[in-house]
Length: 96
Length: 416
Ligand SMILES: Cc1cc2nc3c(=O)[nH]c(=O)nc-3n(C[C@H](O)[C@H](O)[C@H](O)COP(=O)(O)OP(=O)(O)OC[C@H]3O[C@@H](n4cnc5c(N)ncnc54)[C@H](O)[C@@H]3O)c2cc1C
Ligand code: FES
Image (cartoon, chains in turn blue, green):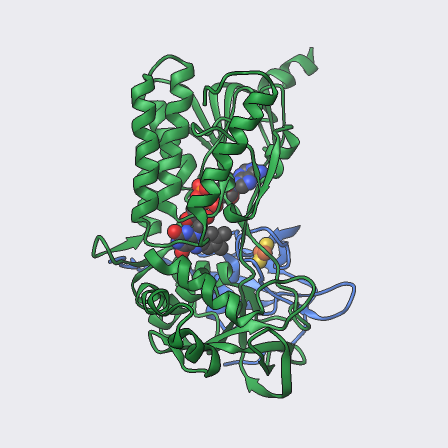
């Protein structure tokens, strides 16, 4: 059976909030673990957007990572102190 | 001068370029490199394995767990030890005259003698009102997040679209501790053919003849009961369950609701012929997984001017190819799901066949070796723990016939 070796804990920042994740996890997976599914607002309709395809095809999950925009959070592994930002800044999340 | 240097830096040479580091591409790379060829594997994902990465289930025949992530890692290690070069996060965007154009920071083109397209499959969209909401994901995303990233993607989850993929992902999610409320049909629309209860049931029944354990048991029941009382009973009532997960063959999701994120879905009954009936109900869910079926990813073969044929039995449009996986363009080969939708073990056997077919061109293997590789593909097909398309064997026959026709029309003898 597959054993999941506990990976090193990593902290990064999502829209000003500190998030804990594990080494090797894509950003979107770490956000999911913290109860965050909405990644950005759609510029056209103003609706929330999150992951859809999970493997880099649809670009629904994009955010600005360390200043570079259009990065797909479903593919990009987290790094210590990484800064992930989207146009959701200032929005309150439902803590669960 | 500067330009010359830039050109030199941005170009690479190889004997074979493989597009796609899924099971087909990985196995091919090992076969080719072990016979001494220079091989470059290009993949746009950040790691290798393709759709193998999300696969995790019990193989009924071998009585062991099929853990795609581990199999993929082993294959990559082997390939690397044989000198195969990998370019990740690099997409191939054009192929022209044996030059492969890639989106890589350093390398822009690879000049090569042969190209193997192993680009796999993509999920068909299943548009439903509300499908853009946060909490709606594809069955493939659900599989990847559950099995590869070990994330629970929701608390109360349903699937829309009933097929071998959604059934197996639902089982995997339930194992991972997610509350899977059931699988539903999509509301009928111009765009999908997945709303007719009878057709859906027949299709999963025949496709599941050799599927993973629980689907097999379910399919087995149906195959024996096909067109008999049992099928009618299943169609009449909503009492199908696989591993405790309800399969609502007579209910369709018509709309996904929620202000910011998914909060509920509208569900209506559906007649045996696929017509919505009655007023419907509201079901509280936080996550909806859409399964619209799989399509071979053929755009690069189109760009490379390969002849494309439509064979629904294989999953739709696919590049015309010989029994040895040669396309109509000299030097371009195909393997894996680009040739038709099948399970990972078949893709691996095809990866070997394509590699040997290429090795034959380089005069490194014999005709006899090739025939053995073809037999191995057939063997893998008959032992595959999952079958996506009910008439896959017929599809492969049609492809061989079309290839023979093509060879005749261009005036060449049938040489495979
Ligand atoms: C969502 C989904 C779930 C599946 N689940 C199962 C399952 O549970 N069990 C099973 O047996 N089969 C499953 N399959 C079928 C699966 O396609 C096969 O198992 C197998 O992975 C196919 O192997 P492949 O090598 O042909 O392609 P893939 O495994 O799909 O690999 C193709 C690779 O090519 C890369 N690629 C594509 N285009 C380009 C390009 N232009 N440039 C660079 N790289 C590119 C992709 O990033 C990918 O890594 C699933 C398929 C999908 C789409
Ligand atoms: S979810 Fe589709 S690209 Fe990230």
